[in-house]
Image 1: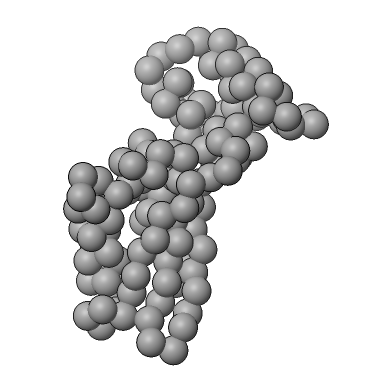
Image 2: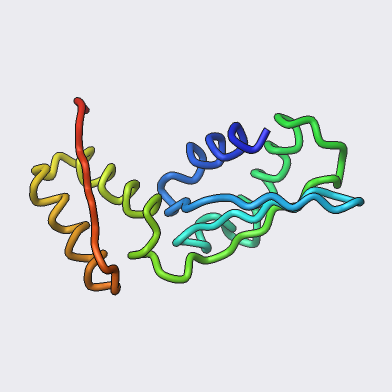
Length: 126
């Protein structure tokens, strides 16, 4: 299930700027393309982390051995990626930065990246 896969990868790669997932099914195997802002951390040293993630996905979603392949793709513009900015705001708030300052920082960064407009909504408790 793609939604479950998305949630799993979002939890696993939150610190690495996870920004989405793309799933391609070929006759031989399933290709999962992970979009992230920090590709080096997703890959790990010598590709160790991506292999671990591949085996986790394989076990959890019951793919046969070698039937799934994970790839990492860098997000072209981090400032224009809503999920990446939401994670950035989340970490700022978890580090107890005042809400207004955290939101204004994200807003300013996104606008500097060339967005035509930004809508940031913060609600609830931490």
